[in-house]
Image 1: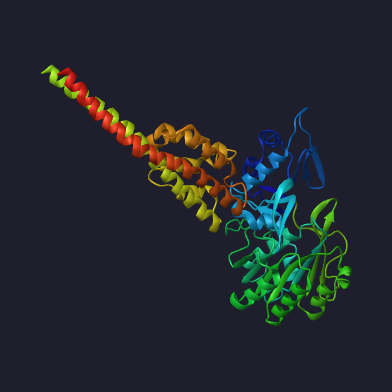
Image 2: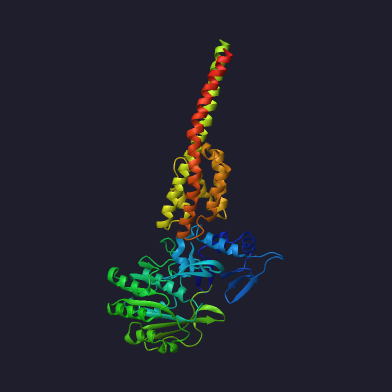
Amino acid sequence: MLQMDNKTVSLKENWKEGLLYLFPPLLRETLSNIEELPIEEIRIRTGQPVQLCFCGSERLLYPPANQTLVSAEDCAAIVERACEHSVYAWQEELRNGFLTLSGGHRVGLCGKAVKDNAGIRTLTDITSLNIRIARACPGAADALIPKLVRNDGSAYPTLIISPPGCGKTTVLRDLIRQLSWGLNGSRPMRIVVIDERMELAGCVRGVAQHDLGPRTDILNGCTKPEGIRMAVRTLSPEVLATDELGSHEDALAIQEAAFCGVITIASAHVTEPTLLFKRRVLFGLLESGALERVVLLGRHNGKAGHVLGIFDGTLNRLTDREGGVLCFER
Amino acid sequence: MLRALAMISVFLGCTYWGIRASSLLRLRRDTLSAFKSSVNHLCSRMSYSAQPLALLAEQAKTKETEVFWSLFSKRLAIEDDVSAAWKSAMEYARENDAGFASLKIQELRIFEDYAKGLGSSDSTMQTKNEAWLQQRLDSVMSEANDAYNRKGRMFRSIGILTGVAAALLLW
């Protein structure tokens, strides 16, 4: 366990134990000697040096002279191993362009799209992979809960916004977990997670790789409008949680759920609150009261996971402007 | 007395040789048939279940093919690719099971070609891979059946007759 600033960053599993088996022998040996922590991503491209992304920095791994670190066959073999030698069983994931591995690690894929009448059927000839290493950050939502919970312990409908890569999903995940357990002044709530991109729970064969709490149900791989309607009809949620809101249909479904008294907690790619005025879909939810809190996350000194502000439904700031609060540190 | 014992020993030896030669042909035929059936079972489950190959391989085993599929299933977790796991399991099966030991080199090559594509593509391609294997196995099976029906009987007969003739010569 690594402890920083009273926030515990737990390494859910040593990433080397969970991922080294994927790589070809030369790359496996090279990566096993990497000691810098923490690696966020390993980016592999055919015939190119391997790119290691750390928190706020990166490094390129070059092969020894006259050798190729990663060939096209190596990329195909990595995918095959990631699929447990069962590519036929991962067609839906390949169609969506990513695989979720045991431990919650995600492998994003780039290659040749094979299409049929319904759209992209699968990806073949994989030429690059982005392996994003999962880390659990229990306590990431500690700084937020006091402002996001009412006196009776129930949560305000909340939207978490930030540019990409600033920790929205990590914070959302921990917020779900804490509300499910009823921690930090909240009361335990029944939560349904609409995990369209299978990123929040990171389910592998029906088993969630991230802890979302004991009162959380997960609708995996389901579109948000369908999932929200199914959940409201059959699962009697108190809270609906979803990632990356954006479309008109998503907003409509959330609005309907709000009319039924269901609280929504979601995230969206927005760089600052004033831009919400331009995102009619999201602004409409604020106007109607379907969302009552906005949390702005960002980077500070290159580090993700900083709360830059918490706002109410009319975008009045509820927290101090200066400093910001670090939710977690990778 | 000694002569009688020698006659009986020669007769039994020749008969045993004939029956053994016949049973090897029968074993080859039965092993091919069982393997064909278990591959069919594996591919059927592949097409409708999203279970990993290691689990499907374990479920595909029959009494005659268990020695292979059990090890193949375990080796998938250790080896870097399916072909390596297949080869390792087949070598073990040939060392420990007479049925697999009776398979010819060309038959092993057919299985190795099949293993190169096993699990590495979508279910449509897996079905095509299996259909290609079944087609090749059909001709091999036909030859194995024919060999057992003709040669099997011949070897048993030769064994018994040779035994009788040798016993009579000794007498």
